[in-house]
Structures are given as C-alpha cells and as structure tokens.
Amino acid sequence: MPAMWWVVGAVAAVVLLAAYLGWTAHRVERVHVRAQSAERALDAHLMRRAAAAAVVAEQADIVELYAAARLALDAGADERESAENDLTRQLQSITLSGGDPATRTLVASSRRVVLARQVHTDLVRDALTARRRPLVRALRMARRYPLPQYFDIEEPPMPPAIPAPAAPVPAVPLEPV
Image 1 (cartoon, rainbow, N blue to C red):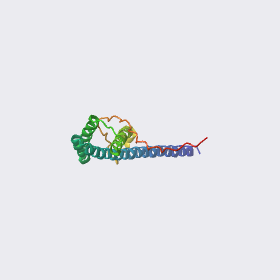
Image 2 (cartoon, rainbow, N blue to C red; image 1 turned 180 degrees about the vertical axis):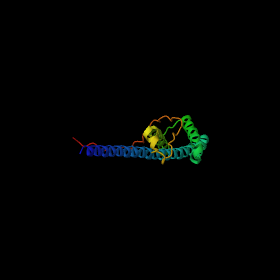
Image 3 (cartoon, helix red, strand yellow; image 1 turned 90 degrees about the horizontal axis):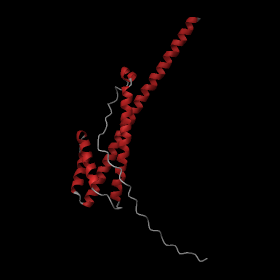
Image 4 (cartoon, rainbow, N blue to C red; image 1 turned 120 degrees about the vertical axis):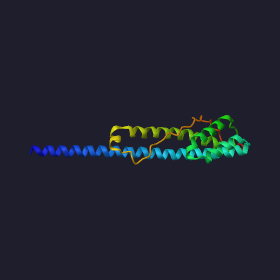
C-alpha cells in the first residue's frame, strides 16, 4: 500500500510538470505570434504613411518629401529602416496645416505609426524575454519561430490632430413665443 502512494505522487508530479511545460510552450508561441502580427501591422501603417506623404508632397509640390516617400514605398527589407528615417526627417521639416483630406490622412497615419511602433517594440521585448528564460532555452521551445527584431527608426513625434472642418449649421428661424 505505501508504494502506491509513491506512484500516485510521481504521476501527479509528472502531470503537473507536463501542464507547466505545455503552458510555457503555449505562452512562447502566443508571444511570438503577437510579435509577428505587430510587425505586419507596423509595416502596413508605415506603407500608408508613405503613400499619404507622397500624395501631400504631390499636392504641395515638395520634391524632397515626394522622393523620401517613394524611397520608403520602394525600399527593400535591408534598407527599409533608413528609408523610413529619411521620410520621418522630411515630415518633421515641413509644417502640416490645412484641413484638406490628404493632410488629415497623413496626420492620422503618422499618429498610427507612432502607436504601432510602440506596440511592436513592447511585443518584441516580451518575445525576447520569453526566449531568454532558462527552461525555454534548455528545451528549445522557441526554435520554430524566427528571432523577433526591433524596427529601429527615429521616434516620430506625435503630430497634433487636425480637426475636420465643421459642417455649416443651417439657420433655423426662431418660433414666436
């Protein structure tokens, strides 16, 4: 009878260890998937910002901004950070004013880039932290996932939102009292 308790205890320990390893493996997978999704979202927002910058540059006839926007749109993976930094510097050198739709789109997409970059940086940091855990390294739980990379671009300032033009309020005659 006493040997049976040892068997039950050993089985319970194995079950608990297996549950913990499964939970850890799922956590590593989830954080890497989220980091990959954040990278794709950041890329999409950067492309939208570059396209909006090209439109604004065409309308305002700003050659340097247009060239930087085109380079950002056409850049390969190895030169993408440099192209985005050039575009950020060009955007910082101009004053965005006016309520036209193209400028509002550029401001909105620039604000989204700032937020997407913050989310991406946080998730890459979390994925790298999960990879550095001794158990994850020992059991090579992260071997299926590519090493997440930070996207090192200059921190673009959060541009102020340009309010949409207010619709005219129709004049309503007052009723007699």
